[in-house]
Image (cartoon, each protein chain N blue to C red):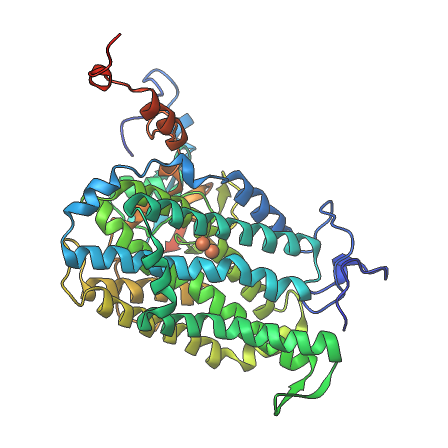
Length: 376
Length: 102
Ligand code: FES
Ligand SMILES: [Fe+2]
Ligand SMILES: [Fe+2]
């Protein structure tokens, strides 16, 4: 089915499935098939924040004091976060908007992606403060083997869905040949790709991000890199919402509250969905190995981080009706809860200097010495 | 429960009595909670560990099975919960409860 930016066919959005129904026409929110997405939009917008509001200037001093192995942990972690948000800032838009059928879900996807771009911009804010030229850090994200391996797995499911959607929207259903490879294109195949993609996004938002948060907050527990931690807390609050949205989508399908064919697919592909989760867990553990290869840091090491991955994975898998495959029963990093608590994250102007003001402040602080050689 | 209630001694005792409920965690453990705190706050005040992130009903980290009883939400819960689940961070008990923590 060809995509149209304004579907002139009169469709009833209350009777459409979330995806692969008619393209959306009127952006109306007075009535909603799935009210939850409208609520998520409101909540997300109420969280609006700007990275520049957070003063990260003190981190520069802290960073110099870190040992080499701690620097490796900190910077690698930031690189990984940058990769994750680079993917999330564009992919939900490109993959899901061409196939979405409900106005409230369409706008949720756009709102969600927009906030991921705020996250991306905040990494530049953080890195610019630490290095006069952060190019080397950014450039390594595409060169570093460890990061590339993760990127491959994260983008694969998106890319599959995007490619098949493109074939379907330009050539319709059938067997289509591209560069000597034949692709069967039909609605069921597309929906399968969508289902797997949504699971992979859920694993990204629900597990991968939390591993990186743990590393950030382990520094903050030692009162180091607190500007960075403040930013990551704002990001984590947004991510809590994103993971809720993908859990809702998966559960609406699995419980037959949306598209009956998606319910069948959810059953049929449950093992594959589970494998996506288990794979993400495995990769995050390998990542922990890489992070701590030159040594641990106080409060966090490879084993504790791996336990935390398992603990979080149990929770997230249970939330979408999967089993809880890991032994770990109690939270190995109990302090994480304090950092993920949304009460603590408001950017209060009175406590954190706004950095744009700070620039003005520095300019206006002229000491007598500056005029030392100035004779009248 | 705790003694920090602001109701003075000369007020009728049943006013607070009506707002207190027994929460059963398992066969052996039960405690009393009042309506003026979220279920999560009440549990924490009595040294019961509950997993949480947001404490505002949108992340789902505190999801808990409700086996018996009824709660009332003080904040509209946005996180996904099953029909037999509650979010302790944003609800208060309105009857005695039997719950099973994750
Ligand atoms: S702690 Fe987030 S929903 Fe309860
Ligand atoms: Fe993000
Ligand atoms: Fe996200």
